[in-house]
Length: 118
Length: 114
Image (cartoon, rainbow over all chains, first blue to last red; front, top):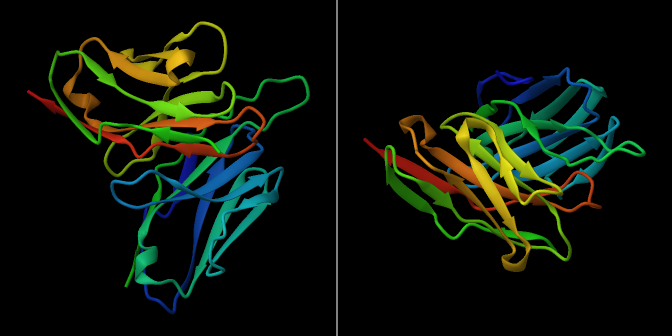
């Protein structure tokens, strides 16, 4: 069983819709990530939040808007998407390095939200 | 810049046969190295990791991997494959000073024949 929970598992939306993907973890991890994955491809990093602050934005179009309301939750707001945005969206978390600790940075993934844009 | 190469796009093995999936990385120093597995329609699950010490690391589901610094490789092995091992396998590298950013290989699809 995954300890990172993503909802919804499936989402179909039109190009004018506004929707959100949600992610929750209760492992005490302070780094959370959004990845996009196309079929038969590796995950592509979109955003990284570290201690609830956006630390990495991989030049993602503004129609994707991340939000980290607290250390356990991560949202991805979607607006005016294109059909090519259809993909599996994966949330992940990892321990963030604290002074004196080794942070090896392995990722804990949710099962993903399968997004279809019509 | 860090990079990962998985030379085999697709591998087919018979159930009960041994398995080796190749991974080569490029990084200026010794990075953290990972193998993840992804079943169809699922997220990725960590199989094992290397960060220091013994170069032969054991993981879940009977997998092991060996870090070879001289060859910049981190190959994944299993002595006897089960039908449930059919999945996509990703090798990943993360720099020790590069917080938050892992680089994935393109993946190897494993098919298991009965």
